[in-house]
Image (cartoon, rainbow, N blue to C red; front, side, top):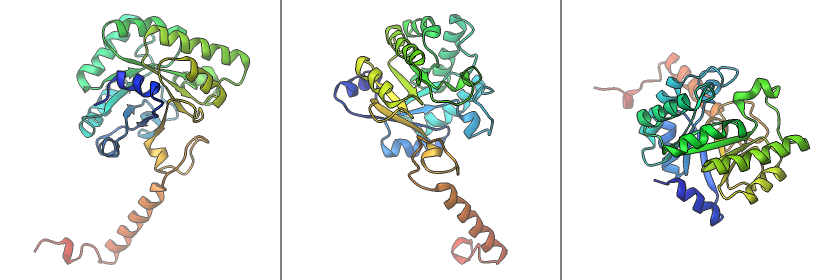
Amino acid sequence: MKTILDFIEAKKNKKKITMISTYDYWSAMLCEKAGIDCILVGDSLGMVIQGKETTLPVKLEEMIYHTKAVKKGAPNTFIIVDMPFMSYQVNKDEAVKNAGKILKETGANAVKLEGGEEIAEIVEKMVSVGIPVMGHLGLTPQSVHALGGYRVQGRTKEQQKKIIKDSKILEQAGVFSIVLEAVPSYLAEEITEFLEIPTIGIGAGNKTDGQVLVLHDLIGIFETTPKFVKKYMEAGKLIVESLEKFKQEVQEGIFPDKEHTYE
């Protein structure tokens, strides 16, 4: 299993890091079989699994539940868990308690927090007690209402300065990596070059130290996906076709046939 030191080493050696966001046993098992470097159990499960409009309603207990399933499917893969909205923003003590609960109950390896300077002290406290933390800047879904929707960040000089400043502050606070989401590629490249820790991009161009996508987007479960998603297959269409074939064969009495029947 990889460690945070392996990710730092990968950056030094210019070896790209692969991360997939997924939420259950079977998909985690396939990620590990494919040799994916790390799995993010994202609070995006609120939208992908639960069909909600944002990540905000996701509960700590739900993150723990899904992470346990992922750990069973990928016991030898480095697993990072999103801390859900309001599980770390209230105060440092509650944040550390909740992060510790996640790691103790799931066997995961690290947690991920959204935000910059405003969470620096929380990051420092977590790291000081042995909790590895990944940062997340740019489009931060838990701040979707404050950002005015799911919009690209870092287009203005003011936004760029803040993201750059926040990345430096997070590195100083002790994060081992930072996700850069939906920012211009030139900004992601600049941040990647001056940070000693690796950056993981999603909608941030190909100059980051690694890339992350949601599995369900990558395999084409949904018809519509963001601009930055590349569909490597159309699993959604294949599944529907299989279900339609199953329905047809059942109705026509073709399935189950002798091959699939106990005598």
